[in-house]
Image 1 (tube, protein in one colour):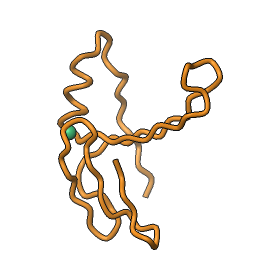
Image 2 (tube, rainbow, N blue to C red; image 1 turned 90 degrees about the vertical axis):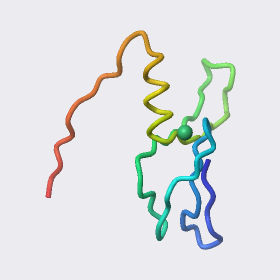
Image 3 (cartoon, helix red, strand yellow; image 1 turned 45 degrees about the vertical axis):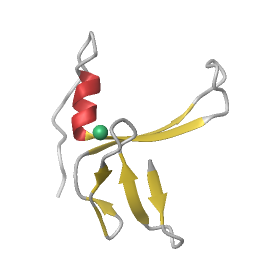
Length: 80
Ligand SMILES: [Zn+2]
């Protein structure tokens, strides 16, 4: 869950699972966060809804721990 200041700057990020308030400095999240912004489409029962939520890294790991099939993970190449 995210809150923004009146000027649009990110103010607060809270993990939707555990309620932990993540560290935000000058509008930037300073720790691991998994953010979802998902628009459901016609083929779902939530057509027209856009869901927004955030997980702290610990809750993300716990959710992935419930997967029967592991998530694909690759190293990201960073260009400088
Ligand atoms: Zn959490």
